[in-house]
Length: 231
Length: 125
Image 1: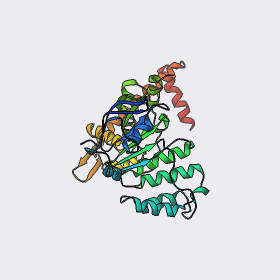
Image 2 (image 1 turned 45 degrees about the vertical axis):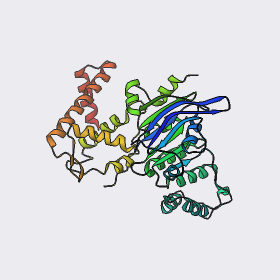
Image 3 (image 1 turned 90 degrees about the horizontal axis):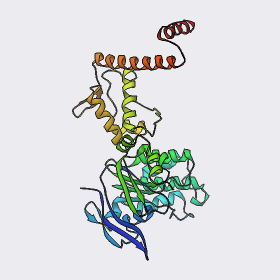
Image 4 (image 1 turned 90 degrees about the vertical axis):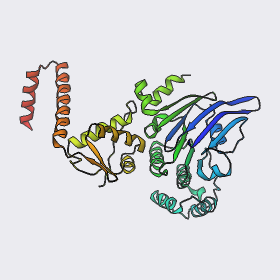
């Protein structure tokens, strides 16, 4: 059974159609890049899958069942903007996640944060922007989820931090789980991807295995993307 | 076996093909010894910072050309067939030499001149 399935999924904001007839299947155990320019519907699709928006029409199935309470338990979601209360200390946030999620592994989170030389009694507001992003990622990756959905995890961080983020994703996702990563920073991320989905103007333009695509086009995914969506 | 290697990957070429090449060279050069047990697919992938599925694909390819084999439930091992390893080594040496001769040719050295040149600088070191 597919982990995630979108069937004839449409979403409009008022008269504006943002997603048009999306059909998509995500199997288990894959790292998938959701790639598209700004404003093409990536975040809308991700919010729909997380049940934060309601589809205008169509269906979303997770493990064969319509999304809802059960799917939220097994999806670990990193939104574009942080939702953490910045007056909290790291210790307190960990406690909060522990209370919230059955599958949160607080020992793993603490270990990863200590590896980053973070003082756990520190307030979030006292941390740099890059550190806050790392903290958020560590929290999300420390859940033993079936599907991780990361919305622009590389936005606004320096290249060294990007490498840290990619390696953290790669070494921490649960065996057999899948990861969806949305980004427009393709060249940074393509080495860890199994598959890519290209999205443009609210439609899926392509879904392919990465190495097959490199073979066929004789170039990097980044290059294929640039050629396809030249402005 | 602790493995920490940092391979740079070229995004223009399928990653699994690059992995096959790197592992082949590790075997030919003796970095991986005949009969060595390989780490699990996941550990191996993570140590090289690649996706486990990509590693799986590369290992399947190496198994196909018999440079590694799977012992049921026990993991994957480097072949003990030294003759086979030597055969791949010979093939590589041949390819590299041909490439070298071609490069030298492009700056006006014929084969004999190239060999003499090699002897000359080889003696100096």
